Image (tube, rainbow, N blue to C red; front, side, top):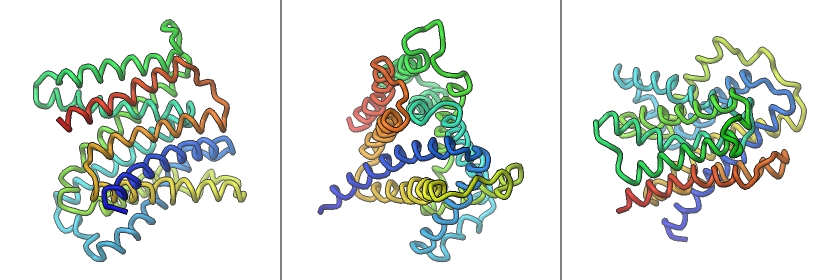
Length: 295
């Protein structure tokens, strides 16, 4: 197997696991697991798991981000404004709605990034970006209304949390750039998860509102935190060593696709032609941007 083939496989496995994970989270909430408790527990445990992985790769180098005050400050900002924000809003988006709409709405983040960069550089977006922005807006409206513009087909909280998850993904993408250029990406993510997990435990400690521990709940928690979060992230990051980031980001469209398909199969949610068209429009924006970057 060539490195490119391994890279493509890993780049597909990461988003596929994330998509399956979104449904696992939905199943946990259906079993009465508290969303606030889950956010705290998930960040803490996933942070510990990733830190063990990072130590196996980098050993004592995992402490380098704390050797410099400005690097440590950037890491703390990323932990709360990037990692905690995106994880918490995404969990609440699933809780308020379902895994399908949450993953698709979060996928509007590449368009939000294009808009942020346009304002930052004071330049109009490229034609492909403008087309992608229009597609993302139309796709979001179709999913939110089922094509009936005068009324919402989902709760306002589900729509707001879903779009906030997209905003969180923007922070998560843009904030750690300098840190990842200096340090290992897995190390930075591990510390960010652990720090944000410790932070959210101040208001939502993991020893309160604990779930009813059953075999199903433990299995779902293990899959969601260890496989669907920690391992999925490591697999996706590893793919970047063998293939271009544009290729990997394009394959990220598999996440909302998998989340939607499984939500329809497992929860029998209504996801008709209009919703599918909206999802295709939103996911299609990534392909447009990937083609522009390739050129």
